[in-house]
Image (cartoon, rainbow, N blue to C red; front, side, top):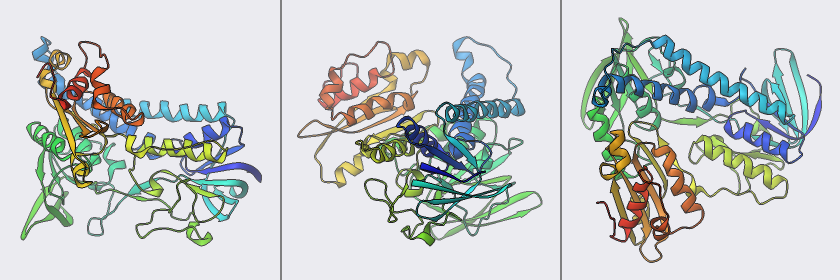
Length: 465
């Protein structure tokens, strides 16, 4: 590895990092991306978003084949082939990570394998098996992402007390699985292994699941998941665990009551922490907050000139698409353009069945902000396409400003919510009103018709409900 000088060095090749590198190259910058792992794509492509969704889709097909096909006049003998399912998941991951490598070649980005350390502003040292190289750059972008939080009283052993990266590769279906944390990761992984035959208990410290989403919608999701066989203990803390005789005994506390649950595998899904280990940021003077997040200004600049940061490492919603948008924004700002991210228009999705998606304000947020609001709802049970698909659960909920009718939030629990929430993101980005959505012509029969009807319901004029 020879010494080189770049316009931009990106540290980390996850969605934020690799997208930033590609956009920088498009804008004419000489760009390098340093990644310590063998494959590009970061946690999202290798252990997170992509493999988990592959397993969610496969497990959903398996579940439907066992429980729903007969309704459609399809008779089938169903048997699980877990190695084949895992192999398909791995093939999906490999195809996408290789695709990122191809994009690097296409855009003439130098992919440098190794562990990066910012020695000083404008200088990055990269250590690999072949030694240490010193790279110089006008700008350095930290895009190192996050890692799973390990609880002090439940240290990971990689086999029976695991984190989300390991939950996508279990060699067999556990008879009983306990999940600590009822956020997106816990609910999604719980869904996968429950569909495949595990008895799943999800423990959550708060009084509700998916606390970042709209409360009414999460209540509906909770009921749906319980009908599917998942069990929940809310308002409960995990206080410790011990492995005995091949089983894990987990000590729980609910209020003043203590109990013990025995299981085969414990998945700790209590959140993620920013990854800055050995990066050298503190040593060069980059300011870090008390939770370990890198502090940046509105242009993603750290407190050290020439050093920028995006994605999970700066906090906010820990979402791949949020990191991507920040990566594009910071690079365009460096190029003298008007890079910007509208955080109110960033959707959030939980890929359970039914899916839960939201963008903009929740009802609680709008009311706590002192806004007068109007709400429109429309159930998928009254949507023709949903009925034809036999996916009747859930609803669309639209929150609009009572004075201006401007769309403040959209929340969808139902089929393909992750796809159709894009309509809400676009509407918020362009400052649309509920009336605007209600006036848009939607194809019939289609799932997004539920959005039109919910928008009409804001003005108390829904047609089909």
